[in-house]
Each structure stands twice: as C-alpha cells, then as structure tokens.
Amino acid sequence: GNSVTQMEGPVTLSEEAFLTINCTYTATGYPSLFWYVQYPGEGLQLLLKATKADDKGSNKGFEATYRKETTSFHLEKGSVQVSDSAVYFCALRPAGNTPLVFGKGTRLSVIA
Amino acid sequence: DTAVSQTPKYLVTQMGNDKSIKCEQNLGHDTMYWYKQDSKKFLKIMFSYNNKELIINETVPNRFSPKSPDKAHLNLHINSLELGDSAVYFCASSQPGQRDTIYFGEGSWLTVV
Image (cartoon, rainbow over all chains, first blue to last red; front, top):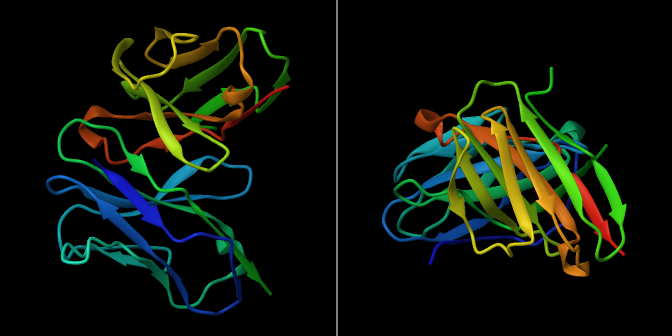
C-alpha cells in the first residue's frame, strides 16, 4: 500500500539552527511528494512539492529533494526562525486520481 | 477572506448525539474533501465530492453522512456519536486540474464524552 513515515516530534531548536525532518514513503508507481505546514490555529497549507525523481521543491527557505533510490523526501532549512514553529506533514499522491496520503506530522518548536 | 471555512471550531458533545460540521469554500473549486486526524495524528481522507457528487468514500461508518448542497459547501453530519469519533476534522478543496494543491480549513475539534 501507500504510506508515509516521518520522524516523531516534537523537535525543539534554537533560532538559526539547521533543521532536518525526515520523511520516507512507500508507494506503487511514481507518486508526487509534498510537505504541508500547519501553523497554530490554522489549516494545513502547501509548503513545497516535487513531482518526479531528483526534483527539488523549495519555498520560504525550506527545501526537499525527491530521492527515488532511498524513497525519501527530507525537509531541510538552513536557519530556522521562531515563526517557523508549526506542525509539518509529509504527504504523497499516488499515481492516478487518488487522494493525498499523509504522515503523522512533526511538531517543530523554535525558541529565541 | 478565509478560503476554506468550517464551523464550529470546537465541539464537545455526549455519546449518542447527532452533530454537524459545516464547510464552505470561496475559491470556486469543484472538489471538496473531509479528512479526519485521529489522536495518533494520522490524517486520513474520509470523503471527496466533485461538483456535488461523491467520488471517494474511504470505508467510513455510515453514521457519517456528507451532504453537498452546492459545490461551495460540503457539510459533515454524524449520527449516534461514539467516543472513537473524537478527532479533528478538516475540510479541504481543490481544483481538478490542480489536485496537487489542496486548501485546508482550520479544523474542527470534536470531543465526544
């Protein structure tokens, strides 16, 4: 089946620290991969995506590279800010007209 | 303007009651969804509607009945609430040609006591 596994949280970092949130997936075919972010009190919103192997998605200083050989899509940011505190969800869309499959979410807290 | 809005945001109710959660989107999207996030934080699709027609129903108990009076609204009605229904319910919408970009509401926290 299709599934997404992401690292357990919470993750607590100091401002300007380097962030990595691991995400691996299991899917048939060639899925599209996503990172969604949920800020406190808000709905999920798309952060970045990649639709094929070796693609790099990027937005707001965050990056993730679609690695087919390791079935991974790790989220990285070189220098986090307090405003990045949120829950981050890794997700995939299997090939075809199918809904998104989400990971459990990883809570990030950035302290000043 | 809120793109996808759902009400109520918080709901505490007793077992056996019937309750509804409303959702409206002002994005002009044709497709709307209900997702459930359980206590373990898994976020799973429940239903998907396209132009008021049901296209996805993911093995959800028939106590859950979505209703779409028009393509801008997708309400979720739950009969005979059970403790296990306690969760956060997210409404979302997208455009068929842009399925990769889904817009979510803020979530409705349902607690059944």
